[in-house]
Length: 120
Image (cartoon, rainbow, N blue to C red; front, side, top):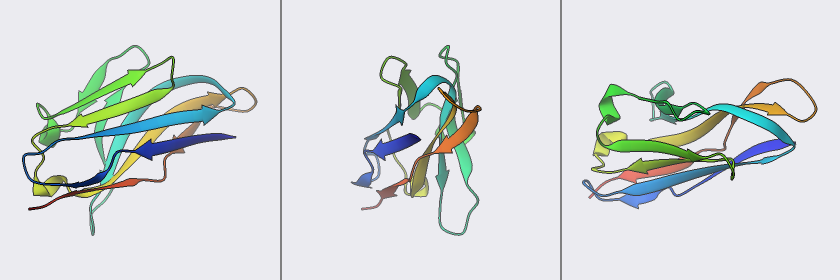
């Protein structure tokens, strides 16, 4: 059984910072790409940032220069450092990872989501 568990969401004022964490656990053979998505009310889920297992990163234009994605391969964990937060960053943030279990085929796994609210 493989699962992703997120933490670090919350309420923050505009201009503030938050750091999200997502740890993968279970019978994991390898993890390829990892990333963060978000979904605001009434909108489609969108990619925020992604990182390969070699550390190459990509970002949505709306967060470039403000958000930083990183990962710790030894801990099977991905992070999202969010700075200069804006009200439009308010959304549920989801962790995603392409994981090959010890037994079974490679698949796409999702965390349960963590709420980020940017408001004064």
